[in-house]
Amino acid sequence: MKEAVIETSRLFIREFEAEDIDALYDLYEESDTQFLQPLSADRGEELEKLKSYIHYIYGFYGFGLWAVCLKDNGRIIGRCGIQVLFLAEWEEGEYELGYMISGKYTGQGYGREAVEGILGYAREELEASRIILRIDKKNKDSIRFSEKLGFRKWEKDLYFYEL
Image 1 (tube, rainbow, N blue to C red):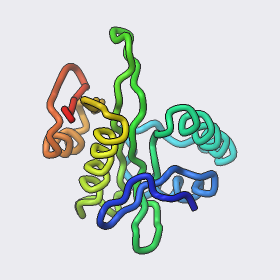
Image 2 (cartoon, rainbow, N blue to C red):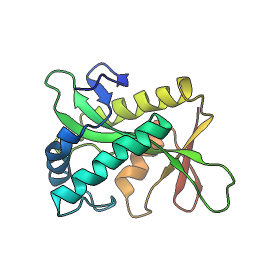
Image 3 (cartoon, rainbow, N blue to C red):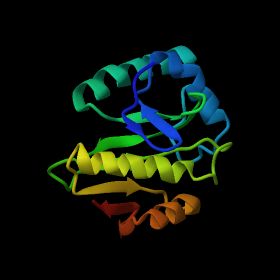
Image 4 (cartoon, helix red, strand yellow):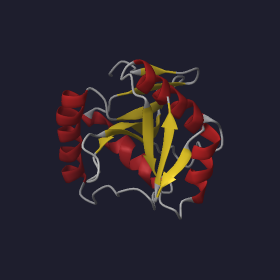
């Protein structure tokens, strides 16, 4: 198993591995994913996508969406991290936060703990000045969650957090 990229009091956040494919499907099955890109119905196809992501995204950037795991048993309870967002009107990419915590573990502070760890990583390791967050206007829970964390509305479906 990969070592932690980020550790918090109850979590360790690490790169995904190909062996995590079943845990990833379990995570999506126990969660509200209406605002997320779905996993492929074909596990073999999704496994190839995961392997490609691991090779190209982690390999090129050194970061990406990571597995959020419980320290006490290693169970994957989320998928959170940082990606590079390119919008047509911007010349350079921005750091974008992505987060998802299993429906079985929401309301217990794990999402906040994971995101705060990721924001610390962005500040310290990437020396980022801000993080962008895209939220569908219908996703009221995510809007409330992001505002509690200190994100502010910017434009359309974009929120930002100054580091």
